[in-house]
Image (tube, helix red, strand yellow):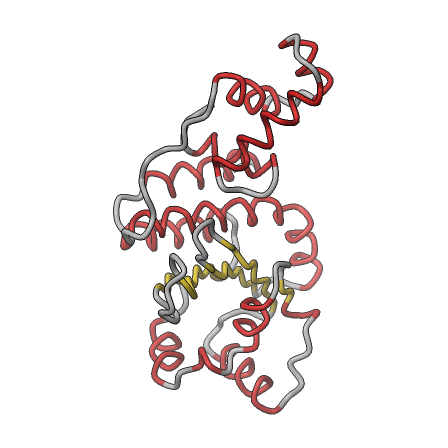
Amino acid sequence: MLSSSRFFYSLDRISASPTLGDLETTLDEVRHIYAISHMVLHVIRSSGAATINPLLMLTYPPEWVKQYVARDYFSIDPVIHLGRRGFLPVEWSASKWDSGQAYGFFKEAMAFGIGRQGVTLPVRGPHGERSLFTVTSNHPDAYWKQFRMESMRDLQFLAHHLHDRAMVLSGTRNTDFPKLSRRELQCLQMTANGFMAKQICARLCISTSAVQLYLASARRKLTVATTSEAVAKATALELI
């Protein structure tokens, strides 16, 4: 499956998942589509509530999950600690797991086939929600490096879309679709088609600053940070 095809297919499957159980099944399907070892969506906070670790969806072996929960590895997992504090992806190989506790934790995880490489992407929702989306691999280093280069953008979009869908299905997010204006939709659609701001303003007979304002308004309504994310989310919601 081509990169763009697998991305939009994955978005469609996530959007069509009617329950949290189905969404977890979709997560397993998506990791096979991308030919990697495991995927995890870990909601660490929902809707500004103080509840810790309210939702965990993953493709890890059940034995590892049982041990992780029973031993409360949430409290020592260094990826979770880094993800809670930061905004940027946490590349496992670029981080230092040289403390005795962290080293022992990762050695144990690898014994369960979790993956030699991994990357964790923090997700911040519009109502104080926080999630961590993790992808792991047992492929050779060269393959993983190429995969990261080619697929990071897909993973960032998928992370936000999975988070949004999980929030809706768990009952902590309003299911009403955002109401975008005609101009906002036109600007998003043309951006999705590859048009630059100057080309959009020429087509719509409006100023470049107006195009930028419409795109900024669309980002705000869709609760995303970038125009690329707005295009991906509007496409997934079938708004464009």
